[in-house]
Image 1 (spheres, rainbow, N blue to C red):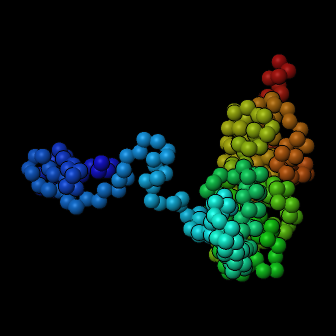
Image 2: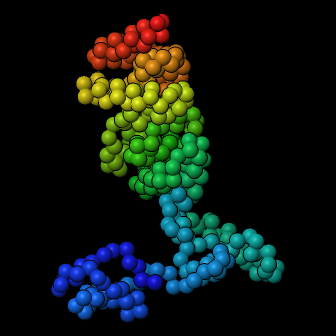
Image 3: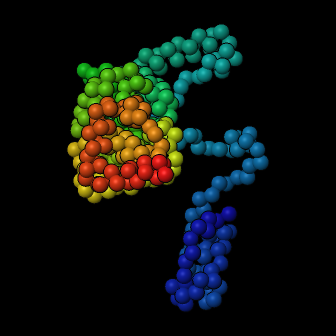
Length: 310
């Protein structure tokens, strides 16, 4: 069937009563008879499939290319082990030898990517990152290897730095502490490698938005939706008042949630909020005081306490 995902007007009479002739690949105006378009390309599949086995046999294209494989999914391999055992002894030895040489003659970059991308998938799975973030981080790591940026640094730290950069680019809120826990690399080392890789590859990343962290922190603290909404309102007011500039996004997000929880009568200690956000209680206290003073939120908290007493 011809794809009909667009509608055209007849340039001659302006009518939209068009006929799609799928056999000739033409679009004809039914009102005036003008051939609006000819030699259309049919991009649909050329077969019918009734089961998965039939589709596998007829399919001529392989899986799409991906940076999460060292050869981008486009390489070939000399025989699978299951296939080799079907051969005779002479041919079997020959193909085992060919497989060994294929592995030996692979480049240093390919060998590095084999190990690094396996580690990248492990960390990505641990952090439950979306597929597009994993793909982007694999692309960043591949570019870093090709530019020689991995030399002199541990493979794991560059993997963690690439993942953090991909998270920031896709607005997926993950902190350096979480990446440190997942990869086993120190937080400072990941931050240092992240800055180096993004600078050398010319990757421009905007500062994190504190609002991105609200949903995750609220879920961990089991706060109500209205508390979450109020925290976002507080943050938006803080951004308008330029209170967020120069402050850590996780700290200001956690403080906004703490204030919102007090307003809605959901008691959460500063310790609980700090543990979820991965910051210190001192940071929560400082940001909390700034928000109260600048946004005049103390009245709302007192109102909540007064309403409870009554």
